[in-house]
Image 1 (tube, rainbow, N blue to C red):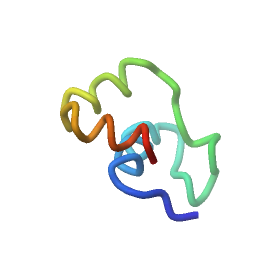
Image 2 (image 1 turned 30 degrees about the horizontal axis):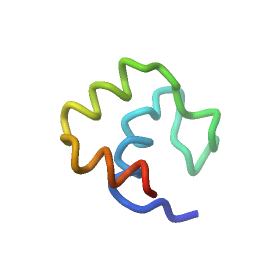
Image 3 (image 1 turned 120 degrees about the vertical axis):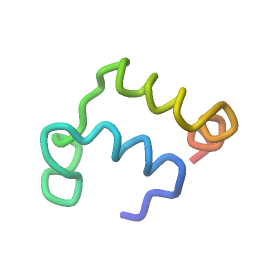
Length: 53
């Protein structure tokens, strides 16, 4: 499944156990600190766009 940018960037940031192509959702961490760090890095416009994705 292709996930559009910038949402794909957020998911990549949350890949801490493995990678999505290998393990799917089990590769992702739902740690709020990871998501918040990504939000700060990309800025509010990208966050809004990712939420639309």
